[in-house]
Image 1 (cartoon, rainbow, N blue to C red):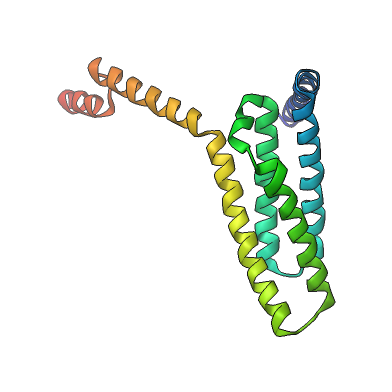
Image 2 (image 1 turned 45 degrees about the vertical axis):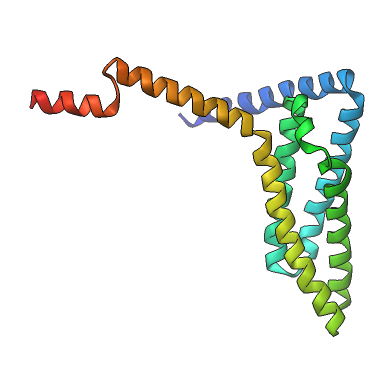
Length: 181
């Protein structure tokens, strides 16, 4: 069983690499501007990941890990479906670059170990802003799938009503089971 699992995992990973490369290459050829935007976003996201171990504040590092995860998922989603870029008008051009600058500035001030009223105020406001950015980036990710979720909800409702009309809904099955007892 173990060798089969290892072979299966390797095959899956290889498939992901091959198909992901095809998607990225196709995007590069069809929409080079978007491709460049995504490559830049990947660099910025990698920078956020590299900054995490340099920051002492546990709350900030937790939020930065979540931000990194959200950005990674946003990039992958846009690579798979470039039409969804329209939901991210300012994300790549403003929010992500400003977040990187804010993280850099926070690290710089934190490493100076300045213990003044101004530095504490800056620290507190930056911690709150990074937490807010985390929520905003999660909202961006959620918005990318909003139409998909609405479509799935409609399909669920239709399926549920069809099951009920055919007498196959859960409540119908329970009634049938009780009749046979």
